[in-house]
Image 1 (tube, rainbow, N blue to C red):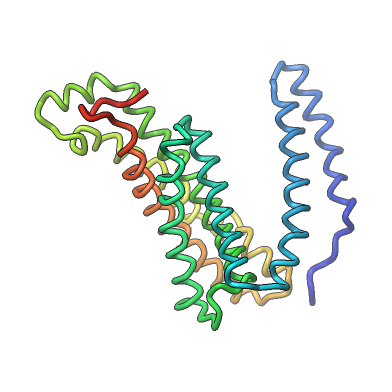
Image 2 (spheres, rainbow, N blue to C red):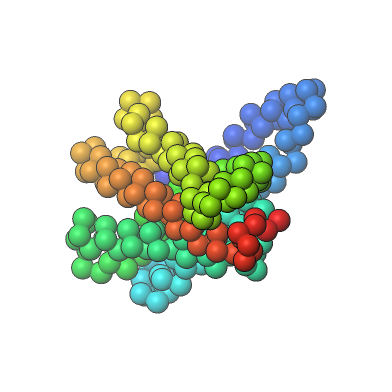
Length: 257
């Protein structure tokens, strides 16, 4: 049995609940209305365009086209991280993109080759959706981790300089905030992994079940993707901080504003 088709107009029924949200925001002076409406509008436009685009990508299913689209996804995620964390686009975009790209590309190719066992590891049906899941989780994790690292250093700059004055090198002096950043990045995904199946039924598993897959098949895929998300997120935050810090300090190990 296939998934139940939803008419294109029925998602707009959800707008019934947006109106009371807007009224409450106005009454309480919560300035979220413009951002909420803009976010919903932008999400709709983006998903519609992506849906049309992916239909042709899946039909064409070319290695170079698929890889170009994945690289575009990595670049967009990197740019979003740089802007959200207040980093310099010119100096930090490439390190962030590499920090995203290396663990996630390596993980998705490993999954497609050795876990799923695809004949074509760049098959658009697996390559692009799974990569999107990995990148989406790495994006949120990297933003949390990078903000924790650099905000911690800015707020404790005197302590950092004191550690340098005690003959610590840059790595040793920044280690407390580095560890905090990794923990902050990983805590949400570890908590989610611990409670999955008890507190929530995740999106990939739910989607496969709605699409007609047997529950055990969906569960195996979900185990694979959750493990991959946790691993790629862990290495992603390490790579991102290690690569961005090269541009974040001057020759005297002072944090560049």
